[in-house]
Length: 144
Image (cartoon, rainbow, N blue to C red; front, side):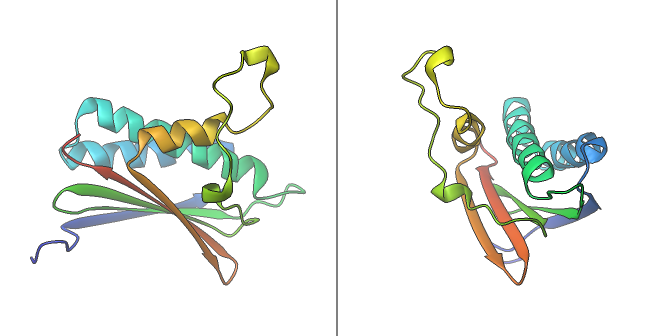
């Protein structure tokens, strides 16, 4: 296999419901662990994915309409790539401000801390949306 090509890939698709959160995050954690990622990095990526999935489940599907979430994990020579797809309301995480960590908890505006945490747990996060489908791509180095 040539450098940069995916050496392995797995996918899971579930309804965007909180009852599926554990299945989805465990899927990612197991894939990361099987990709020889350190225990600390597995925990980091699992937490990042959980935060993003909770946001998708809670905010992307109003009026009790529940769509689907699909996750595709792939490992490259030096990194793990996680793509999260949903068909809910678009939300570009790259345009979201970080929570203000300089203020005490009681003085902070609501929101923003989850995205701040995700940004600090992964090496790269990208968003794209087209044809009614949102894609979040997370990248984390395997050697970390």
